[in-house]
Amino acid sequence: MANIKSAKKRVLIAETRTARNKAIKSEVKTAIKKVDAAVAAKDAETAKACLKAAISVMSKAASKGVYHKNTVSRKVSRLTKAVNSIA
Image (cartoon, rainbow, N blue to C red; front, side):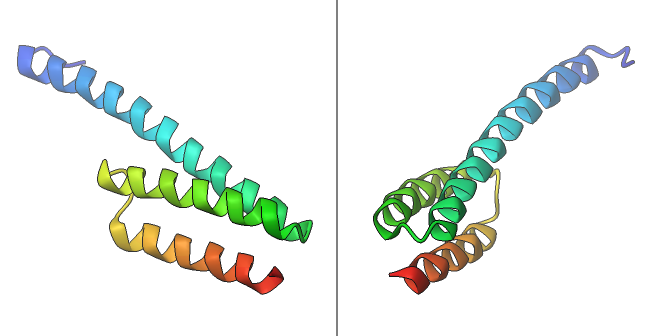
């Protein structure tokens, strides 16, 4: 464990950020699973609605620095392609 005051603060900040990042990543994964489930069920309307929500969640994650913008772009592209394949 850290003995220096600034190092102790860093440990606390790292824990806080880790918890925040974990929550955001979990939210993104859940949104992606909802889109995948709708695509698997071949439900075009639900898939489009879930895709719109997922894109919003992923964009927010990218803006907060949890994901790189290219990673989000790739994920959005793959989901959009999947949804378009059932339309």
